[in-house]
Image 1: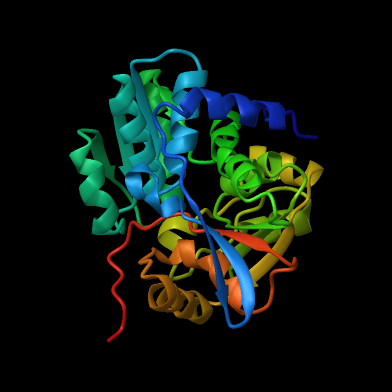
Image 2: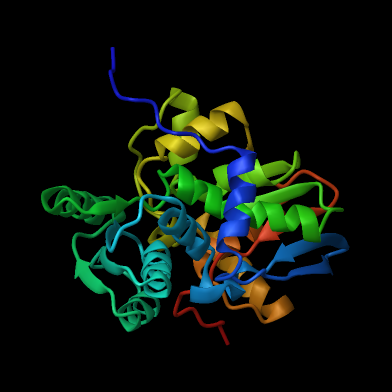
Length: 307
């Protein structure tokens, strides 16, 4: 029998507290209502967040709501690292960010511009994360996980809280899933709305965890893996999603790329692949609900539309 201590699990109250805590430093990103192919939808334009992605929310909440510290170490496929580095700069904390050697330059360049120390290790997020955890433990420095942290999950949940307040007519919120932090947080902040959690076919950490009854290691192979490439769903997100289920969905890489192109054609929104995942599911008819809100979660990529 495992003797692992159960993780702290955030609540809807924690999400509301996070919203108050981080609001001086984050943007309340807009929602946009539209119609495509005769169907209505709403987009939560979180790619307009500072740093170009939602991850700043969780990073700020973790640093502001946790034990005071003057140094933090983290690992990231790019967006979380940029969020932590930016939050650390805002709060006067020194940050070291471990990233995979494959991190896109669109994420590496702004990351370096924050002044954080950048360490490149391994081909995938899991390798960088292991190296970062080892370094944090050896130096006695706080390690801030990208998604397996109650304060991070609560911070990401402020996206759902804003959708509930700013687009109350929406009955469904659709998010992309990597390690589960956004899905779990939005589920807590969605004020009872259905949450559809979409994964690439090649990165199914949530599907695998729910099938097994606990987080398990899964393959990582997708055009969206730089952002959604967590091999294992976080324990904190798993506990939230087990208690508050979401509707799962899968999309192929071809569908993700097509959705990226369509976002550009329809709205002139240039996203990273992960941010097109909810739209891909909606285009494919895999999103239930009469009036869904799709979270466009980030735009840190070198993607260009095909001529």
